Image 1 (cartoon, helix red, strand yellow):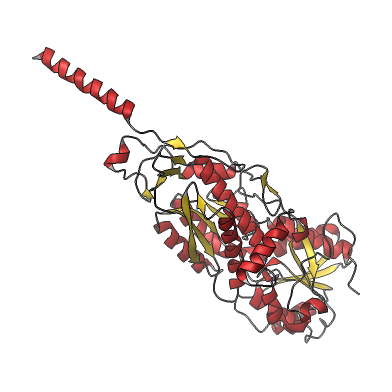
Image 2 (image 1 turned 30 degrees about the horizontal axis):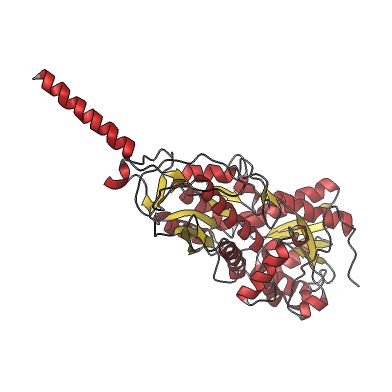
Length: 452
């Protein structure tokens, strides 16, 4: 009896070895881009989170990725979601980024590794509530591979932990707040192709102090992580250079009567007001400033949150002569003019809607390159993507040639090649409803010359 049992067991073992040897093996997908990671082995049929493998696939795949895997069936798309502001007063900010990312999809032929790219998403409203709601919806969609967003730092703060808990990774083209990549607070689910405002605030202060030769400045913020953080970097740098911050005021998102806060600032006699906020509130400040006694000739300067043609409608003719700190378009790569031509033709516009279209293009291309690097592809076209492997590939991005420059991600998710410039609105541009495309000054360039 024992001998028969041993023979039976031996036969089973031999059969198991034969089946295993003949089972289909996944092959790593073709790679491109400048990212690096180890391809995971995964288990699922889908698109669905691996961990619920089918009988057909479980023998061939076991997901070892520590935050899970996603499997994409042969005829299913690779789903990349966005969290961008696409409605309301700041819709141009997110729509501009969506357009830039879509052009990257187009330039990729609309496919990655033989699968159609599905690019859709949620409106994050440029608010904390909007960011939380958008992230919750995206996290519940188990087909999502990666996320582009958010537009606004205020939406990013609540969105990041939700995206992180879902095992997803997000790349923001425009959330620039210092706190988002602060080593003490950073969540590894978040990266960005946008600059860090620790760079922008310093450039703005340097321009005011060394080029305009002004020594007294006031600031206004709206309490958002972006605005409050950026004005503080400006203030700290300005004081370090020898300037005086006469006042730092806060308004509420949604405020339209700016005369009380402007009157308070006027009493401190600043030569310039720096207000890195968004279009509706920033437009109200510019539209009303000249009617406040003491501010008739005070220089006005905003930042990338208002650097859009739509702002001119909100601000009116008082925007002529004002300044912005914003990414330096002239420092972008030689591929940027061709991208602009595609953008303007595809969306039937005379200029981009806002500032971060190129950063969104780079973010999409980073994601696609990372997918190509880490995905495991079966002979029938099924893809298996480890979520941690994808994240690791993004963090390993080095010397990635983007529209905005050469991108390299550090351990805290800052990937940008940050070039900041200062722009000035002229009467000629205003008459056309356009913002400037060429800087008035940039670090390392010629000294600022006032327009004649």
